[in-house]
Length: 218
Image 1 (spheres, one colour):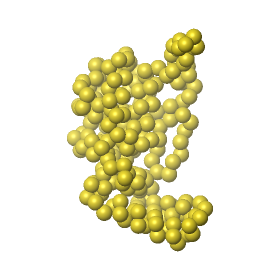
Image 2 (cartoon, rainbow, N blue to C red):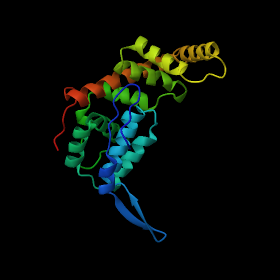
Image 3 (cartoon, rainbow, N blue to C red):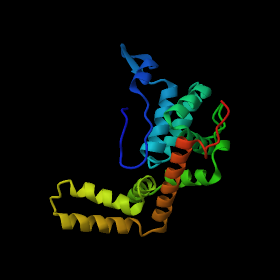
Image 4 (cartoon, rainbow, N blue to C red):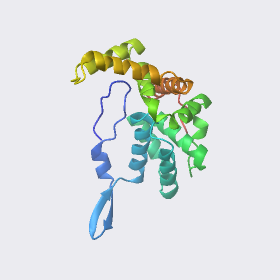
């Protein structure tokens, strides 16, 4: 879980040494097996869903989080403090709110009241996004954090031209253009891309400035 530097938005980092320091141990077949604490497992699932994948991991991510919160004791004050410090508080608020909406109230936590309705709608749109066109969402997310769509497209093309192209540069460029146009041709794909860009901006503004996210009481 080392810091990641993807093209586009910031991805929060959970320090490996902190995970190891609080790891739990269980005996399995006579062997001691270490695994993350519930606090760190929840943090990992939040970062994975909201920041690494921008919700293209599907609704099973929400059921996993709801089950973890139901079967574990979470220190919500500590979880919130860590999320604020590491920069994933807004993503946590949204993920927990979505889990509550579809799987019931999470004991000790009322995340739904802290997330604006439009942000909830973006999250719902993205959690069920079409996997065949999710590259459009990734493009929108990168553009939201770069210099806009033109700059992002130029960066993507530059990165692509730096890689080997067995079929030839012109063929690669043509195939890439056809795929991008085809993926953007449906209203669903355009809606999901818009939601991805809007959510990326909200997460960035909320986590970096603390202005758009309503801070819950610990």
